[in-house]
Image (tube, rainbow, N blue to C red):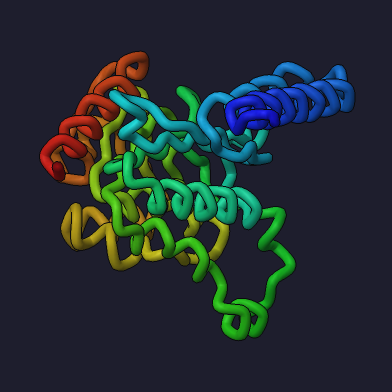
Length: 254
C-alpha cells in the first residue's frame, strides 16, 4: 500500500506543475510594448502572494514583510486619480488589513509625481445631479477610514486630489522636490475630496484659504513649517525614511 508521504509528494509536484503552466501561459500573452511591466507584476504576484493591478504596484516590504507598500503607477498621467486606480488602492488596503503580519502601510508615487490630481477626463461630463446621487468620490474615503496607519511618501506633485489623498493618510513625508496645492479654482471648481476641511485643520485657515482661492502651491519646506508634513528628505531617500518609520511603528504595536 502506498504511504501518505508518497501522496503528499505527488500533490506537491502537481501544485508546482500547475504554477509553472500558469506562469508560462501568462508570459505567452505578454505584448512587446508592456512586457517588462507585466513580467514585473507577475513576479510580484508569485513572490509575495499579492495580485497584480493595472494602476498600482503593491507588495510587502520591511522586516518579515511587516509593511504594506502601494505605489501609484500611472506615469503617463502623472498618477492622476481615476476610479480604477482608487479601486485598486482600496483592494490592496483590504488585503493588507487582513494580513496580520502587516502593521503599517506606505502610499507613494514616482519621483516626478505623487499624484497630480483627479482624472479630469473621467469627471468632465458629470453633472451636479450625477455627483449628488452617485455618492461622488465616496470610495476615496477608504484611505482615511483605514484601520492601520498609512504614511504618504510624497515626491513631486501632490495637487488637487493628490494633495487630498496625502492628507487622508496619518503621516506625510515629503521629498525635497514635493509641491502641494489645491488648484481646482483654476478649473472653476473647489476641492471635492475633503481638502476644504482637512487643509485648514492642518495649516490654519489663512494659508488654506490662500491656497484654495488662488490655486497657489507650496513647496516641501513651507509644508513642513505649516505642519502639513512631518519630515522632508531628499527625493532619493524618501521611501527608505518612510519604511524606517513604518517598521518602527510595527514594532511598537507588538
